[in-house]
Length: 251
Image (cartoon, rainbow, N blue to C red):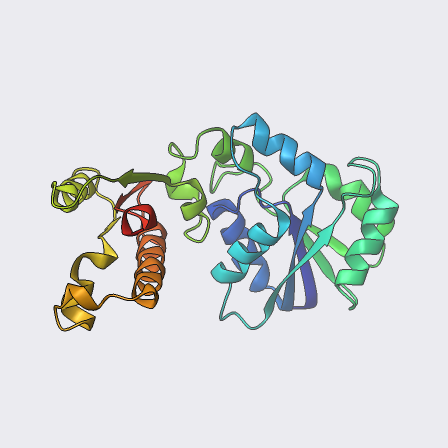
């Protein structure tokens, strides 16, 4: 059993291959650091190539923090390597950033890339580098494949990251034209989640069913309730989510 371990990567985005590697590593040491590294220009380029919004460092750190919540011996940390040379250069600068983020002696580094063996041996001479399933026999998946076709590899994307990739469809129109029914139909057909119009029953629930007493605060509350309902549906989405009305109709 190692005392302190580290696993590092871009996690762009985090997928099942990553999580199984993290769990496997965590069983072999008392404390595991998951180090998320980011080169802003490189990240923007990779996301643009796949026609995706940018998955910035904070977003990816949030995703993995959510996935690993409750595992007290696993700590998610991050480093910004935007101002150092890109791999395979920049080992000296990267090592300094990593050791600043993890101010403990690292006994083992877990990785899935054979190309890193020489670099870790040179710049972490007292640390063992342990390869894990570098041929990806357990999960034949990579961040590149997910970025290129998120829906094809949907089952491999970690739950915390799925809302980022889900398509959001808004149904809008005048009052009582069938939006709510159509939203539910579409949700059932596509086996996914949907959100209903938050203001639909607001007067009945909070105003004694008297629509003459609305105030600006009520509409602000409806807008907030709509946003929360939409976010809840998005978190449960299966590739696509349907929204019944939005704040513009409330306005």
